[in-house]
Length: 265
Image (cartoon, rainbow, N blue to C red; front, side, top):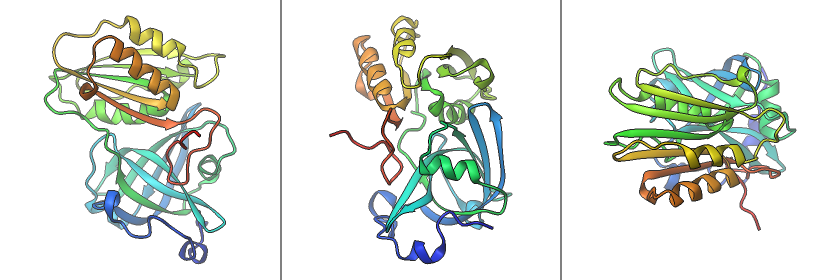
């Protein structure tokens, strides 16, 4: 058994999340054990973790779990991963994680995680989840947003109407959600274009036929891509309250210690 951060070092950290108060009120800290880790597409790793606290965990599809993947001196390094599924009866949580191939602390832990390994987690986190009372739902972004999009799409009832516009590297990465809703999917294959290039997604949303009525748009992925998509949709008359944006990563910048993209400047 390997601990991502050994107990002795963990106890000595200068941890801003030592107390689960403020924005963390209502979350649960737990020690998770890896029960399974495998590739499900060329660019996606599936982790299944267990902990007794998962039996009572309540979350909303689209929320995530924050893992303590490493320590930088006495500073904790955390990364946030979407809760793809929760099996409370079996006390198991599934996390689908994009493999970027970079040498960051989150990537290193994901690459080395084996059954029996232990890691601290805090959940649920996140404020982007399904808006109630909408006539349609549009999910758009890059591969990093696919686990959240899939979890939310699968939570929609059979009477709902939804569309996914998702950029992935190759057709082998096009992992469709098992939704019962009326769901259309447009895959954009990146091919040799670098990750974080917003062009194809912006063009797709600029020409996409939006349904009539009151809908909600969920955006996720690289920070500048999400910003470009917000501007494109605002230009098409989508008001801010109908946009739910979330930046998951920043091109050329490591995420901050709390797991979200570091601010520029």
